[in-house]
Image 1 (cartoon, helix red, strand yellow):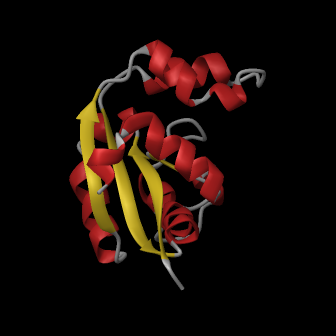
Image 2 (tube, rainbow, N blue to C red):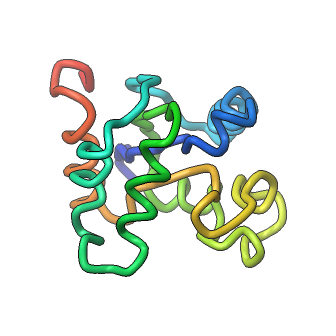
Length: 139
């Protein structure tokens, strides 16, 4: 199977609680290569643009506010079957339903405050990687 890339975000709740190092460690242990990384605070407009696919959903405003509430760590990950593997390592969106040992089960406190984001399909990954990283950064 060919290598693929996916976007990962360590969300403000995890960064604020000092969990970024542990999550990065588990990314490395999971066999992912970090192609690009950036730590910053998203503006509300950037968060709204990133999550624009959810604009009509009832949680959109709260999600954009949350994602712009503190620093995030944005990562481009590469591995064989990276999208599915990253989603498996993250666990279910609801930490209460996430499998034991997954990041969200270990560190998440709610559906919104679930520590991590990951692309859900190759097309989504392409958009999300391009949203945060230039082509030069992804070489």
